[in-house]
Length: 345
Ligand code: TYM
Image 1 (cartoon, helix red, strand yellow):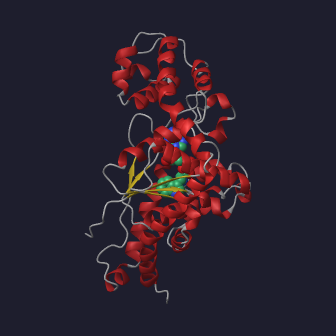
Image 2 (tube, helix red, strand yellow):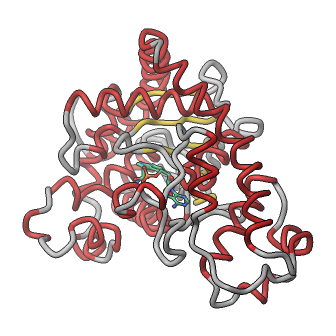
Image 3 (cartoon, protein in one colour):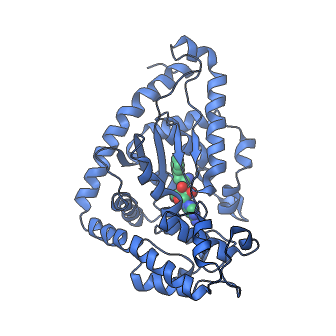
């Protein structure tokens, strides 16, 4: 079995404002993983245009995701922060993967069905082929670990299938070009912690997501003020019962489950631990503690995002430098892919 150097890759789309789900499901993990891995964090602007984006808005949102990475504590000097479209090898490898992945595989992707809605015929081809580009993002760095929220699990399984099929389809050529038994690693999803799927504050059965919520009250944005956060948590939907003292008591209570998970993730505790403290209390008391802890954690990040957004030059320089360093890793990998596949040059 070929041994691969351990490397982390993950990405966030610059479409819409970043929310607590992005933070707890993804960014907070990105920050943690910096201490044990070499990490590449990407702003996936090419994924964003699979649904139409206003160009000025796309530029702003791209800088905002980059600013959020930095504000949350990602160090762009020790690791790599860049935007996808600056490294052409992503798109080049994605084309090869378009020819490796099967139509039947993409037809099973639930996120395409959700995003395309009733009018699938009218969705862009890019939206359909989206998971192949995602596989290319990861594999062009031969990344081994991919921290994501729960909603990306199916896409990551597809990335593994693509890596495996490439390794099988080209096994002979991989060996002949001196790459041993396997050219790509099978990347592992890292879906960790008590808030891998943060739900809407207005409906505990639907995912917190800017586009789906239909209401600002459903979603805590990372740039929300302390007042906004307090108001949204105070008005969050709950049920009439008290907080249970153990996890079994959360069964059939999606809103209570969601709030307890958010509390645990923000405080670095387990849900069990949180329920032991608040079991028997009314939601009003719990919400007030939740509001305090959310404000304490999120407001400073929002302030730093705003400060960085006023320094466009700095953000653009970070992205350009990150892209240069990303290209240094991606270029030789793609060059090998060309050899393996049989492209001349
Ligand atoms: P995106 O931009 O939709 O979301 C970015 C990250 O945030 C996580 N997330 C959530 N986690 C918990 N609760 C929620 N409510 C919630 N909403 C979003 C997502 O799981 C994700 O980790 N396809 C990806 C971007 C991508 C990518 C990649 C990720 C492109 N290439 C390669 C990993 C590796 C996406 O659209 O994420």
